[in-house]
Length: 367
Image 1 (tube, one colour):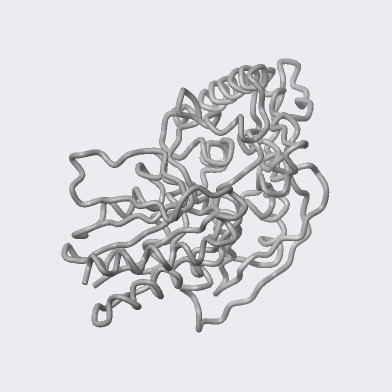
Image 2 (cartoon, rainbow, N blue to C red; image 1 turned 45 degrees about the horizontal axis):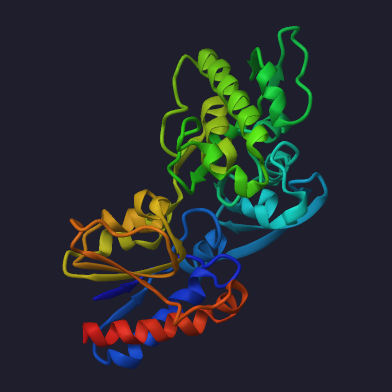
């Protein structure tokens, strides 16, 4: 069996459309092989699209909410409701795509809207809110969202901190007595990357693309370190080094440490929801795809998760490749779908065609 399991190509193609393009190419050159589609997401882009795909035929409905965006201005978002569960894509609330290049500044962006969305859904009687993290414009450790949910961040004088993540440098105490008790029982956070909160591979790895300069990064580093120190003393448990805690600018850490809610890898969650985890056999060929293949992709995002499942070959179709597959990995190969030098805008508009063309060639090798 050939399993087609791509993720989204950011701003170009969703995971379902990507899967269909790859399958169309394969079927044009592989007439007899069985090809099955399993579009995936790590919890970021395409998360709701994938959930909807696997729950098709069941009673689904979309709910529109109005919450604060990353710059404090109202944004409309969609939550997917199924059987008492609500699925949220945090990128639609505080995503980098909602902030223009000139306005990107993680010292000013806020995660408050996530807290608003969770509260609104719980107030509507939702039994469980499942939040896919990814693509955030924030680096506040989820502070603003948690404050909306009832957590207090206090300084040495027991006064509330000023606004913004830089104020976490002055954090002396966290007070969770006012936290909405429903969060621990009814919220699940899915992290998209396996970065810890702190260190050279922590949440600040993505700071520059969110608009932070060198001075901002140093300030945020001190702020997050203080945040982790005070928080972990309060709960008597160290979490900052755990994988996934740096996701979405540390939102995963904040919710895990201060609410006790459930957390797990978004890629693993969708592998379970899709049933692919239990269906793959050691003789199967997996064809996955994503816009940019890097070290993060190979470690614990969708591709990293697929590498750990049974398979004979894992073939990766990518818009950009920034890391080479290790020579010792004899089962994995990566191919660029670009036919030659091309600018980013043109490449994005032709992603579907490029995927189909490359998959056709791959199919000839597998025939």
